[in-house]
Length: 180
Image (cartoon, rainbow, N blue to C red; front, side, top):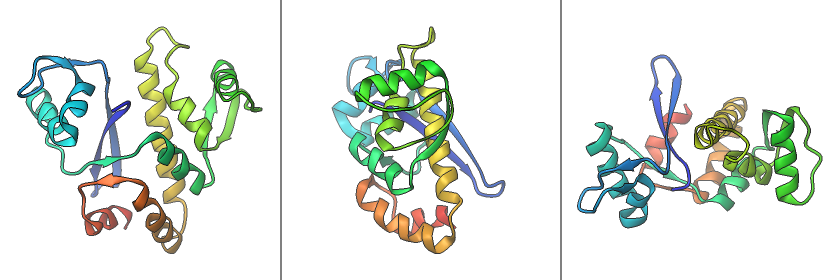
């Protein structure tokens, strides 16, 4: 539960809204003492996290998709990377943490490992986790843009490769409904 992003789809408008929950947000966790929101996931997985979101924010989650760090990077690599606008300090941070790299300020195509490091940056900005969650939403948005830019048959083929890399409580039909 390093990153928690609630994605709200409006199929009529074909619009996606992303809402981040800061992992250190202090909340009431049903059946447990108050704690950081990511403790809900640690204590009871997606089920308890859903209950916690409902109790604290009135949010009812229809479906969950979980991706671990290594699979996140693999999914981005499968799509050929994501294009993101980097500041000079962000590019240096990624290059330094990978021990290599030639990323620079400006529009860059990041591979999976680079995008993961970009998503996890919080030390460069005074608002720390707020900027971090903004970066996470940028990566997800770029990932979805890249995925939606391919033809339907290619998208379906990619989805077949991506599904084994994620954990979800959504049916295949539900997931396919979002692709169409």
